[in-house]
Amino acid sequence: MKSRYASIIPLLLLMMGAVSAQNTQTICKGSKVPDGFVVAGETVSNSCPEGTAWVIKPARRPENRLDSFDVPASRSLSEAEPNETIKLGQCNAFQQEIAETYDFNPATMSRGQIDAQSQKLDVFWNRVRQSRTTLLPCLRKALNEEQSDSFFNIDGSMLLVDVDPSRASKALQVRAFVKANLDGTDLEYWVKTIARRGVEGFDTSAAGAKWLSYPKAKYNDSIHGGFPVDSFFGALFIFGSMDEELATPVLLRIANQLNHPHRDDALAILMSQATPASMNALRQVNTAGFPQGTRESIRDLLENPRLLKPRAQPGLTRAEQLIAFQGIVDGNYGPFREMVMKSPDGEADAVATLRPEDISLLRSARRASISRCNQHAASDYGSFTKILWALVWKRDKEAVSMFKQ
Image (cartoon, rainbow, N blue to C red; front, side, top):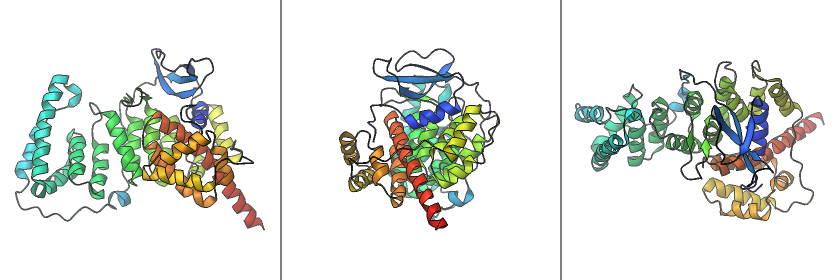
């Protein structure tokens, strides 16, 4: 694998460059971003002190409306909720307490008001924790019946998962997060929570669509040096961490909306998926409104992609790579880091040694890795994607050859 400190997403930057080539510029990382521009990615630059530059592009005009995407019924009903018995009137007082506790909008509050409200929320959380048997069914019922975009959708579902971390609770949390008003919400927490749910197998495509339609979709990572997460990176974290089969239809839908403010971001992620379904989806993209370079990039990716060449004498064995990838899935990055130190450009080793039956594990590792939601995960995502494209093309070519025999 390419060292995660050496460069950032070489493959995806190539895609993004083709999709958003108009009016992009580069400045050294850490420099002041000019007014009217936003950071769209990173690239390598020999002219910058640390060898890394930001790719910047003109900020788009905010949209006034959020596009609505329904969660597929088959998925939303797949996580069966417990059969909890609620007595008549059991939840009446609790429902009133919810209405009084969450009668605020964090987007309009001062820091002092938020701190005071947080103390009230702590009291509410402790009460539910202490009366779990009685109040948990009421909390679940309230979240299911909530019709507004109140902050209760965020905080209440966080409390639900805290008290009952079941798959049913997490599925309800995803639906509640999609329903919530993002103004005043901790966007970093929102994206990272959705990414965690995605890698756990939940359908988070509606959340990804909401993020790409939100006009203020950006934040600075609080842990990794203030890395600027914009519409593209947030969408990559969400769509990249979920099952590609679930993400592809929504990405295609967004890419085909001619007036969508971030259809180019959706297209770039769709181009990175490297699945048979995504390749078929790319053939269905309405390229109207995209520059000629984008159309050529789609055609090249489908017909004559620039693939990694396998190394003649690999420095990594298939076994140690599989151990490293499984470690990522299991949350143990030690073997992966050791592999990167041993072979910083190990993508060529992977293409030379991995087999078609390894593709599934490689995809799982890519999802788990990107769910970390930082620039290092994005860089690794680019490396995984280059390997996947090479392996998928190799597998399909071999299948065609066998068919002709």
